[in-house]
Length: 131
Image 1 (cartoon, one colour):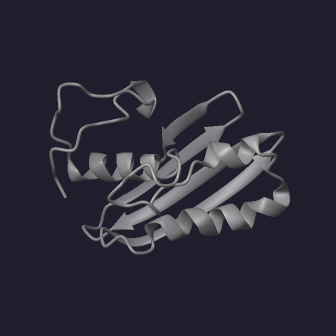
Image 2 (cartoon, helix red, strand yellow):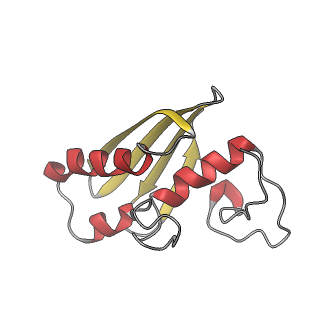
């Protein structure tokens, strides 16, 4: 899974920033950035995978409620269900006091376990790697 993919989360704490050096990403880094890209880009942005992205911020801005949580979790899981790089994937979302948190857990076919937490309070996204 190594490749010459250009990092689009090269800023501190995986904040969006283009890596203009074009460094080679490890398979783990490529998976992390793929997971982040999948839930932070509008649908249709990736011409080679038009249904592989969904911007979680858009649902918060549209007035997401607690009732929308399970639907959001299903949408996120669907983004990864046909991707052969993942052996398993799950998403757990919570909405507390207007802050949306999404914890994504993946096991790759190489046996890597990666858990990421993305939080959006309406002012911007924060990313945290849990495992």
